[in-house]
Length: 520
Image (cartoon, rainbow, N blue to C red; front, side, top):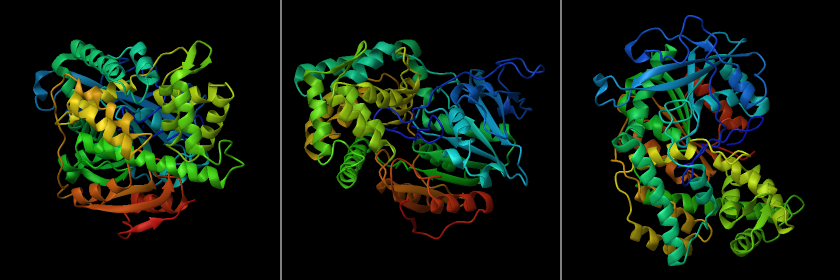
């Protein structure tokens, strides 16, 4: 899938695509504050013992440069079984949590647990961004006045026993590679890169790679619920976070208070269908961007033929990439700049300028967009977003396509989705070479659960709108809320969506079936 929305101050990206979903920077929590708790010692929430929280204002200070006005930040770490199928063997993962609490809080309902998607996105970072309030694109005061905002890094992600097995050099090679390696030699080289990545991760983790599957993480969520002291869970999941929430709903339907699943993933689709769905979604969003350019030529310097300008830029980068310092803006980097920009409608103007600047010999805008998506810093170092993304996605999918099937789909999808089809096909090579056993998540009804709000955006590229009703129908208790907007996920971007979701979270008021919210 893929993080994973840029919205708050430096931005929040909640989304999923190809190999990733959320592009949030990662920082370690403060381990100093509580003199009575040993720093780094996991709190045994799974056994029902008291969880000790410690101050951790350093996290928002690192991420944003300051704390949000009127907010306090506390962190803890809980221990969960590495394998919930064998919880008594004593092996544990450490799950990191952060809660943001407003000093204006009154009539507290409980905690709102958030997940940004990915898989691989940091819920801790997301909770920080959302804590900055509606002025900066975060949660409205109506929510922060009634709930603690709690983020957790799922197992294998960021601060929670992170899986780390892909080198920065291999990630640079992956992003810089031609997104559509059409000659056999180019395809074989890209396949060899993915094979090397799979071997590296298999050598380091062996059979334990299957432990990063979604069902295991969903069971961790119930330990999170216990850690925050809520009898029932209130949850906001974006993108892949909808799949995580849907899995929890099937496993623990009687422990749900209110669930909002925004940017729905259809759990019933297989790996190939999911990849093709994203190719279709991004192609549609790219067309919407091109239309916007035509209608807003004053803000789009590559109008009137934005599609042609982007395609020409990628083609030129294949033979004559623009240098920026020690780097070359190859076709791959230009392609991922396009991907990054389509997650939000606000990114369209940034893409148009980046392509226009690239034509003039300046690749800085391309790298700014692509590096944000890739979570690559100025020193060429990456977070573990893509390590975790591969570990979860490949463990989840029951069947992996063969290399020969991927090669065939590459040409088929290129014909159907000219810019995104072939890259989405070859992107499946990661799991084709992944050595771990599969541990697929359940796909059934959430029998006994209350109504669950499933939010879909008609122009969503990463989790296409068509998946919204499918997730709601599968759960059996899903109620669809539609936003006729652009970009990946909807809440809290417009007053209609925000008011509907807020009323549901606070008063458990379920909107009428079929409610549609207009564009901005």
